[in-house]
Length: 99
Image 1: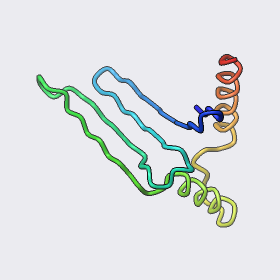
Image 2: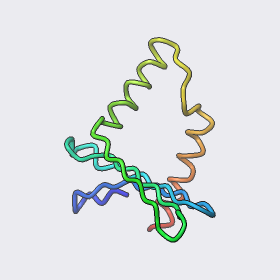
Image 3: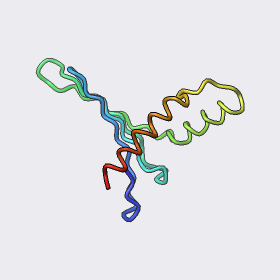
């Protein structure tokens, strides 16, 4: 989500399964020293077993490097055009529904 008047940008993805939850939080690409955070939660007996990893390796830079390798070296694209079309369609529908 991006709210330009407040300078807020967040990308948060959550996958919920029967026995565990996986979350990925991307900070704004303009905040260079903020980590990408991965959180995994699952039941372990009578306790909630939570693992949190903060990665300072810039995810947006890695994405651009991979895109560059696809073009210049013929690397196989992790997100083929068909998947990108679906992503754009979903994001466009979400945007229109938010208005």
